[in-house]
Image (cartoon, rainbow, N blue to C red):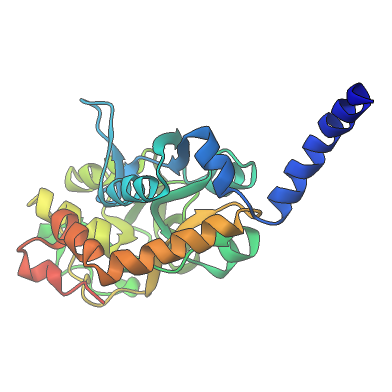
Length: 269
């Protein structure tokens, strides 16, 4: 009888696990595992980048992920992903969540779970400082002689293809090499987010972001989570609200983005 009971319990284990997943009970699994699996591209400063010297991930989103793991009482394990494979990796459940400057979109919300926004953002241009009077609108960029360089698979490439059909589109990976290539005149324009543009303008005096205060789009960054982890989504949303009200988001934004640079501080929503 005892043997039969054990066999029945073992048979029910996969079913119990599946039902828990269907109900969105992922946090107990994460706590039992002892670490949170975080997907990140590591090529999007100032949100997430992989330091080639230390081999460690750095950035605003990295610190936020570390805070989140601590609030769950677990360690963190980073899982390398890329912009072309971000959604595919999410749907394949390769990580518990992804955070690396991911814009909240309806398409992403239809395919997976997305948290509430934690930081405002929008699309603008990164160009050479000497060209600030040359590019004042999309019409100025949408010309056959203008070279636009973008990372593959992300919303910036999508925006460039939809809005700059006349320009020469150059696809280059990794993303974090593009600002330097723009500065070196390997291309003329990079469509990017105001957060990334502001970071590189402060870092390299050869670069400029003349439309940073009037971006082409407005949006927010959020955390991407596979479906079936609704309890994690609720936890992340509560965590973000607390990080906002406590001033933690502002603290990280000042550290990685705004600082004392008055010309960039206007990017805040």
